[in-house]
Picture (cartoon, rainbow, N blue to C red):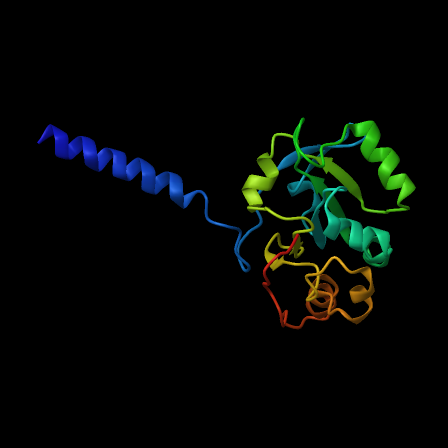
Length: 196
């Protein structure tokens, strides 16, 4: 009998642990987080409640990130949407010794060199925020509405290639989600498979 109880307890622990690993779903509240940016300032998701928010998972060594920054596409998106009051948070979830890891100083210099204009670049070296959102690729994109609900989760666009020329003919899912949602319309493509 004790053996059965012991096995049931182990199963319950495994099931409970697995339920916390469910990916962020469209239509559900965005997981709360606190993170420090590349200038040392602390940001919380809660502090941006009431605003439209884009989360961009970033790794400057990723060829897909290079595609979007090298073509100027990501910077254009950042500027277009932050000029309309959208909060754009680039998140670097690489830790020391991992590909894409940057110090705060390196991140500031890189973003300046790229002429990028996110609201902030959050350094998530522990991977805590990345795990909350189940972000496994770069750029993995999320759009959150002013009520704190995830309205888009997935790829930046429909051209999962490394070719910068594809940006011109791609359907940008992030811009589409923001445009539709801000106009009071349902998001036509609320999820897609992230690539990177």
